[in-house]
Image (cartoon, rainbow, N blue to C red; front, side, top):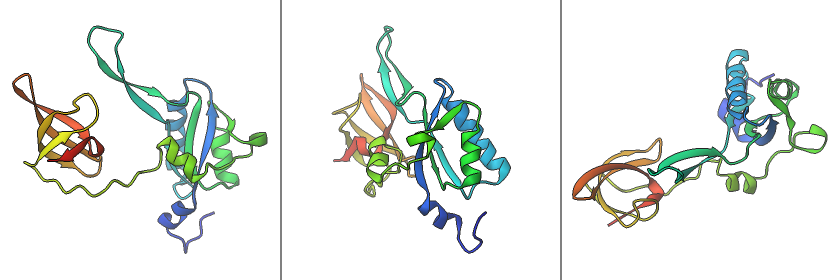
Length: 183
């Protein structure tokens, strides 16, 4: 099934993103089931990533605003995989999956442009040249135009913790790299 001369990283470069249709509300269950089956059956060299695209929004229904998350495409799950008979069968026969998106349930990979538009592929952010104690300005989001001081930087999550002055108090907030600029 797996060519021993090829490393997992080389195989992952050949993998494509596919869209799988699921019962509405089963997206997270399908994701968890596929990930568990990949682990149990040793399919890590064929199925690399399973994603349910979501977005954060501010819920304004109640008096206090809460940040909540919702699915961008209810009823769909994105899978980065190499299609072969075994991987196709595994995904297609997962409970909650109705089929691959494509003509006659024949899987059609997403183009690179489509993957970027969905925001699934990791976007390479410019290297951040900040360190603890640097002054920054928030340029987007609910804290836009606030000034702050860098407390910590998490390169893996692409997050930065910043103390901003709000209502006369220093408040620690977590922001994405693209939400700030150096002063």
